[in-house]
Image (cartoon, rainbow, N blue to C red; front, side, top):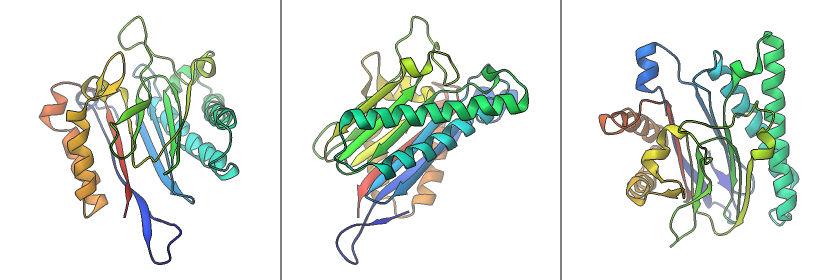
Amino acid sequence: MKVDLERPGHVVSWRVVAASVRGTSHIKSDLPCQDALRWQTARGGWLLAALADGAGSAALAEVGAGIAADRGIEALKAQVKSKSHAAADEEWRAGLVAALTSARAAVLAAAQERKVEARELASTLTLLAVSPGIAVAAQIGDGAALASAPSEALACLTRPMVAEYLNETTFLISDTALESAQTVVRRGAWRRAGLLCDGLQLLALRLPEGTPHARFFDPLFGFVDRAANLTAASGELSAFLQSQRITERTDDDLSLLLAAYGD
């Protein structure tokens, strides 16, 4: 999807390569992928993305994740549409909380409709909206949103929560979810962006500080820059996430979005 900017006949866009795959543990158990990854572009040079990771213990994890991601990105789109790039940081943060609140309400309503406990639809949720001048992100639970400007190292906007125990996290349906949410507003000449799920964070990030590993991301963004066919490139990314070099280090569902802004 491409967005026309100021120069007639000149198209600048976010080049997006993204994939979600089942983890080896879910393949062995004959369970579906419980991640939900959504993205779209919008006027003004915006890239909008949402990633929800369903709780492994939830019976309807993939349903809850899908609802959270779908409602989250629609609410994020409404916030972007209603604000200028120059809106105050606090206004953006309030909009991010409103988007998370809308996604949470949709999941709770779905649980009521299905007559099940909300925990059966539990998931995390990360939202990202980035343009060449501003990046805003919100997160409940694990995963990460990332961005970089030219000549700058890739950095985490949001990062995995720090918990006392491994695999402990906060889910969107939690009573304390909104209180624990990360909301970030950063101004800059953003040209690269990404989202990743918790299944990749031990491979892709230096924890607990949450610094992206250049050896993981630099080749992948180079791949995005060179890709002639983004659909085919997404298929290649899916194959990479299912390769032995990845699956021997994690058996979780894996989701990754990589985006580069340019011609």
